[in-house]
Length: 471
Image 1: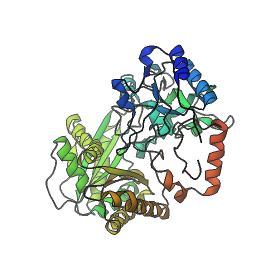
Image 2: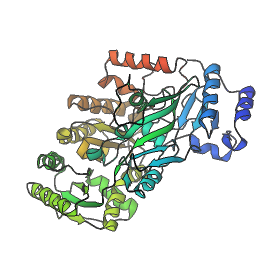
Image 3: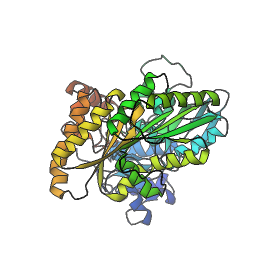
Image 4: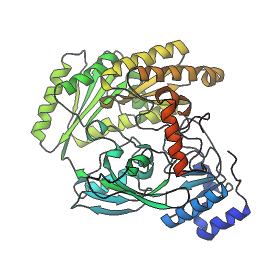
């Protein structure tokens, strides 16, 4: 599709509705902050960055861009791992960073209303002060935005017990491609009124509309947490132990898998040293939470009994806030540790959790076949394995031409095991070539039809989700 290149007339219009500090041009020093996200080493150049501070301004921008056929890439904090905020087609990078207010925390109805530029951890801490709980907690929660979380249906470690973002969104205010403003859903716990447009917007990656208000369901805040770090001498046993913990009647609030290389790189990156046994091949980080401390200790005892059936090292038990913080800092740092060590590609695979071991084994075998090394970790309780393929000494030719064949084989294995391409990172720019593996042509055509209804001129986040042969 041919898009309109932004000219002086367009810039004059943007200046007429925005103040000077809401526009960033390529010559501005801050412009470089909007060229990439956390996806590999991709760099794309928007023609202009706009930072509206109201739904009215977003509406005017989209209406104008739709009429002029100017591509618009919605952008949150730029912490995404699938290239969703990359301005692949140039045009406008539409940042929501100035829409950063927590509008309301309704303690009576356990609800809140936030703008999309609110940092996830800031929101979590604000509701905790009211005795409330917003569980989704992606590793980048200290910097990622609520709007980006909704756009990608983010999860995080505690999804195993509490679910992902979609489970906490009651309603959304959204600006459509033509500038129309809609209110999808309702501020009620039950809603069986027409099609669920709220659910459609969650996870749509900015391809159907720009989210401007988020109505969130909250829970009571659990008073207590206990953590265990469990070393295994066999990584496949670590995977098998996951299902056995659930069979014992325990639903942890988090159950994370880290293979040897992942935790070693994490230790080097953070300076937190928890073990140095080279015979350990993997760790499980297990957390339980609730309001009855005695019950949590009983849960830990049951988990310990289950683990007696596996070949484990000395289990580290963390019941203090500081020791738990160290464990979580180590776990959340692994992605950054991998990035520091090498150029990498991260595949966000997910399978039914009982097949996690088969997935891990298959990934390693495929790595041997295609000559790549992978660092694996993730949310074992969900069957969500992050496969970080590191370039290291691979040639550029092998990286660009051979590796995609190996990635495709990984995704075929994922499908065979009943899984899918992405558990929480989205398809974005980088997973588009593999969509056909898990979604048949009929469903892709339906998705394409939905996109055409919401965005007939394809200005919203083009070249995302759909393969080039489709869009």
